[in-house]
Amino acid sequence: MSVELDIVSDFLEAYGQTGSVIDALDSALPKLVDHTECEAGSFFFGDQKASELVCQSCVGPVDIRGIRLPFGSGIVGRVYDAQTIETVESAESDRAHQRSVDESSGLLRGTSLRYRSPSKDLKLVRFSY
Image (cartoon, rainbow, N blue to C red; front, side, top):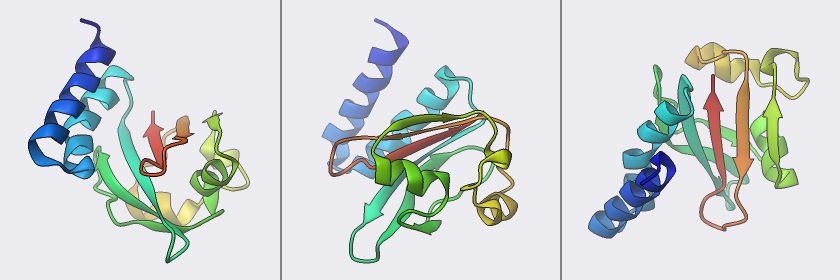
């Protein structure tokens, strides 16, 4: 079985055992980050009532769970609004980059990939290389 299928299988098994998407993400995300050779990864969900993106699951040197960004704020917000896949070669040089988040987390490292899923539950995944 491929590594990608192993990751999906682990996610589905964890979800089946706990019934929690967050627990399943916590189980699968370390393997996904390792497979993509990233330093860190995080999943953001949209809080419609607060109009914010909230980090609900992450792996890496700093735990950023609970970080909240207003819709449309930062690169993550831009990708969420556009519902696109985007590769940012240098977050530091991107006008939308939220330096305050990186300063508080220490996670700024060159390249990041953000992906917004069409699913209503999973909103965003961010990988920092």
